[in-house]
Image (cartoon, rainbow, N blue to C red; front, side):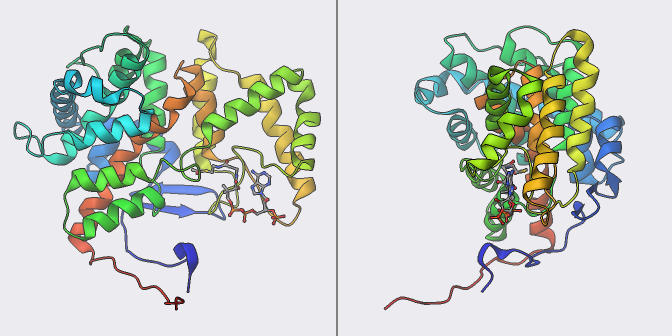
Length: 359
Ligand code: ACO
């Protein structure tokens, strides 16, 4: 028996390779650092779904138009959804909104509809719970820029939009994680994109997958309250002495620094000119945390993971911390849908076995 299926290979994939020992992530043959620099969310979706070159080209423009159409179609549903959203947390509201999408939408292929709808539903739910009217999507904007605009009610700067775009590209695809596996299980039954994505999204509702960036910010707040960067070492030692884990460190697969952490840190650094970000504090906490983890767990290489700088970047963009998980889904949906296609093309009904230990 292999609980958690750790190390069990259930598919061949051309979508990504994670080199945990070397700290490298290769997406369809390209290092994640290069992709985040070269392309946009539309570009990475075209790259993952169609194998285009992932740079600004006709495929990217095509998807840009398709996503704009999908955003507008999803917005048509917002008035009906608003009363049903009352009291729901952001991921649950997104799940409900996706499940309510029409299966056949003005000729839009399902994966374009689903990926295109996500930011509209996230932003409209957030505004509804804040008592603000929804903001209609802008057909000429890129996905990332439009998401920020629909959340805030006004256009973000180009630097901010580019930073969010880089985030969406960076998290778009990451192998056979829990949500992607959930999507593939559903797709393996012959079900369509929508149910597969709803299943994947549901896997993000537990705290063990996709849920650490909020707690990373809680940790930075606590260090700040304790006295700022100079207090980081003492605060971290106290946490470890109390047997608690440091959020944003360690990973099931990476034994070296998660390459996505570097990409996102660099993006926060570029935003600094605008006065955004808490990079000095984050750098001090990262430095002290790595030193403390090396002292406490000398046999276990514990490094910074993607969630650490996700928290700093999304916070710098003014995104509330309980939206971090649905914003992650806005990027990852491209990977989920690529796996759904791959599962359909090459897979088989996923049906493992259980050892009976009952009476
Ligand atoms: N802080 C302190 N100690 C840690 C941490 C941490 N962040 N991570 C692991 N350890 C310790 C464990 O306590 C354990 O010690 P022990 O052997 O003395 O009991 C040892 O290192 C190994 O821990 P495992 O749970 O086996 O590590 P695993 O690789 O399975 O867990 C996980 C990975 C869950 C991410 C873990 O590192 C963790 O809880 N990190 C903090 C939460 C976090 O940042 N989550 C986001 C992960 S990234 C993502 O989801 C995309």
